[in-house]
Image (cartoon, rainbow, N blue to C red; front, side, top):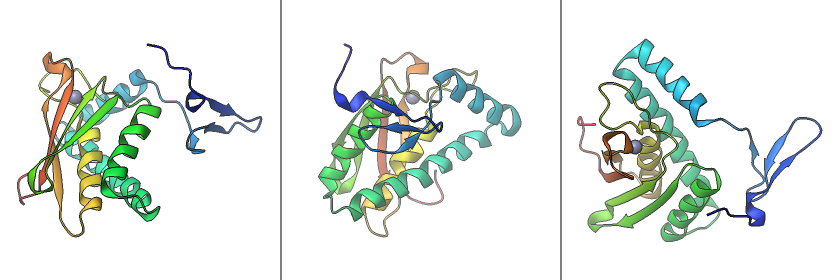
Length: 172
Ligand SMILES: [Zn+2]
């Protein structure tokens, strides 16, 4: 269904700046095919290590995102809702988190922007997994969390599903 709320508006300024009306963030448009091309280049260059690079990139970003939301005084529940909302506004897909025992969680994502069909990859949304891991670690003081994608659209599922669990080094 097409959504036409004011939150969907992008503001284009004469100096070349593009802003998201909902968050006032300075943004740019990156197509799914462009991101796939970037990911393919990483895999061509670094093979399996590309997954780790993408995860770490996402983890760093997710940590900063959650820290910023928490500094605004949002509770954990509000932070999670805001992450879902921002992901939706940014076109990352439709995220739905479910909190489990011991601060563990599950997230189901419809239409993940970050999937990559590539030989040898049974799941592919490593950047997004990193974002979730970074968010969860930032939300829980001094506890490290890791997100693992269990189901991905590239393996035929109609969604991507992630488990977010306390990190038990050195597994990752
Ligand atoms: Zn996926």
